[in-house]
Image (cartoon, rainbow, N blue to C red; front, side, top):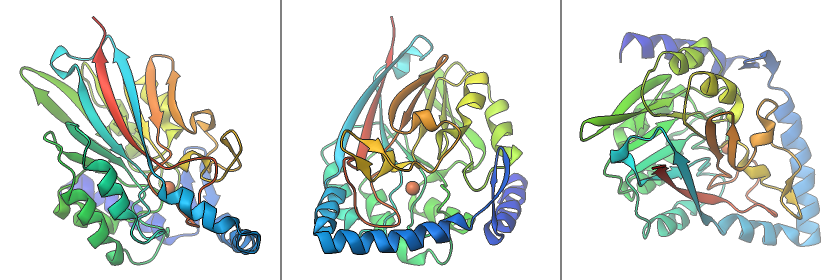
Length: 305
Ligand SMILES: [Fe+2]
């Protein structure tokens, strides 16, 4: 492990064990999550009594393939038509067997690169070993010639990094890689999660990279302004699950984010920065969805000529 990773792992280990989440706007208590879980238990009981729970479970298993095309003046020509498989919020242990549904959906797709924007497990703390077989099963079924890159979400632990890397996921922890094609390149930067685990290292990662075309992977949309200021072209994130439980018309009741709240689902734009917030493949807290299907996203990058 390089020095930078050691410093990061030490900082994150400390934050993971305390009662506060670290956000750009300062420290906030994590205690609301326990209250949220208690309220959910009553909500689940109500749904079960009304018969709606089974419908919500069926909805959660009905994962869609969404296609999104982005056009850029800045995309190097040799990357014209680059296809990205974007996965987010697998929460693989919330809904047993969801890995097989995801694999079935991914199998016929064609793509060059796979980017995974965090939240691999259900809980925000505790052991993770039980999720690795299902995650590895998905990773083994991803055929991305230009690699698989991942970041951590707010449900993940720094201890998961080495396991994901062993599976073949190149984890980007406040760092960037250059992806070459012919004599051109694009930059992919991945930051640590800014919802629970924000540190200046995430901002530094977005500030220090120069390149003709830059993709930012961040678990939430909360760093949209910093990415835009640093001339990122595309920003990929998840976290909100699109609301997961929405009113008819897809109106979300909760998105679990304050900054960048307007970018809670799908394609968005902020100044020159284009972004996509995935509704996620999986579900967290309870294995149901209403009026907001889970998604696997196939993104295509086009160079404006
Ligand atoms: Fe999530």
